[in-house]
Each structure stands twice: as C-alpha cells, then as structure tokens.
Amino acid sequence: EIDVKSRMVTPYGMLPGGEQFQDKWNGGVLAPNGNIYGIPWRSSSILEFDPETKAIRLFGKITATNYTWHGGVCISNGRIIAVPYNSAQVLEIGERVCMPSDAKDDTTSTVLQPAPTVSQSLSSMLMPVP
Image (cartoon, rainbow, N blue to C red; front, side, top):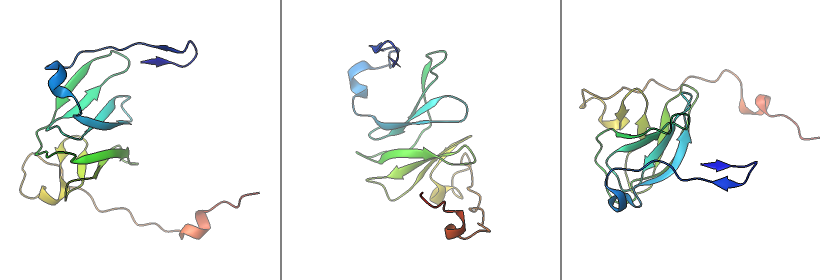
C-alpha cells in the first residue's frame, strides 16, 4: 500500500505458499467493485484483493503456461479482458472466468456478448486540440 501524501509504503497480506507464488501475476486491473485483480502470468488462478479490507484471495481454474497473459483492461461492462502474451486466447474475468473461444465447451464459463455497434464515426468523436 502506498500513501502518496506521506510517501509511506506498507506491505500487507500474505499469499498462501509464500515464495512459490513469485512471478505468478503481471499487472493489476481496478474493477468497478473496487477490487484489484492480478492478471495470471504464470498462475492458474486470478489474484483478487480488496484495498478496503485488505483481503486477498485466489479464484478461477484456468490452464496456464509460462507468461500466459500480460496485463489487462476493464471494459465498459465491468468485465476484465487479459491480453495474451504466450497464449492463443484472450482471458475474460467477470462473473465467471473463461476463455471466450472455449465458452461453448465450458459449462462454467460466461458467453461473451457481441461488441456493441458504434453509431458515430471515430472522426466525429475526436476533439480538436487547441
């Protein structure tokens, strides 16, 4: 935890397993629920921590290789999309965790909805720089 006003850094929480969890996640994404989610790098679980309660948990059961996903983003519907690094699949973290290309075969997964269509052209949404 970093307090930018006092410039104090305080570690908190202990992951089960200690050193065996080194290099397991790469990057974190702040979700609408206020929790931060660690993107699996060399882990078969997602890391979730709550900055308010300082609770840390692991969830999800995914097949992971070394350097599977590298960072992620939270999209407008609240789902987190992890970017593939050494994976042929995008990872979705939402109500459930799934790899969208396997969703039809995985009864515990969430099926992605199609992307919404954009009614405006990109150029009409750009603001001129003064």
